Image (cartoon, rainbow, N blue to C red; front, side, top):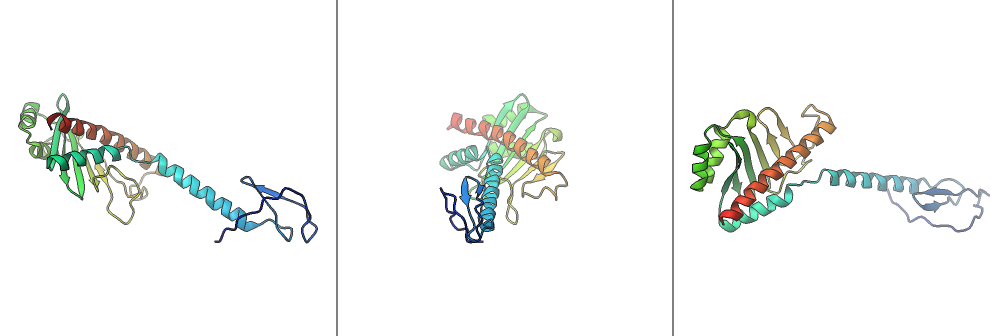
Length: 214
């Protein structure tokens, strides 16, 4: 559809058919040379409105974890590390494996023997911490995130690699297909937002750990 620039008329003059009606659409005064409404202009205005709504929705679902993921990757590259881990509090820990140019795997969980985990952290055995959290942690406390591209959680990657979140009791594939997940769009968006917020907190702890030990 080709959208022509509408003309703004300041006077009221009759068209060829004698019709003097004028129509206001989105602040633009339009007239038809033969007396009818310029449907093309209306369709263009409607298309512009759809684009504005889509942009607003995308902004509402923007990833909060993107900036911290980029910061973590930068620190890992600078320190030549492919893993990092840290204590959150009590018996809860977070660990990450980094595959340069590919993805971040980040797990958060409680561990039944925190003394062992503390010793691993003291020795900077970050990969071992990640492995233990992923395999021997308290299941209901576990959250595992596969961040494809290592650029924070992203929503709506249909027909291409997408991020996933496994909470131990529920799994989400953020490919934009909530129908496949058998939940509503609202529930799907809410799950993404809560996952992104938790991922942001996990990344904050990991970034702080690298800054403290570098």
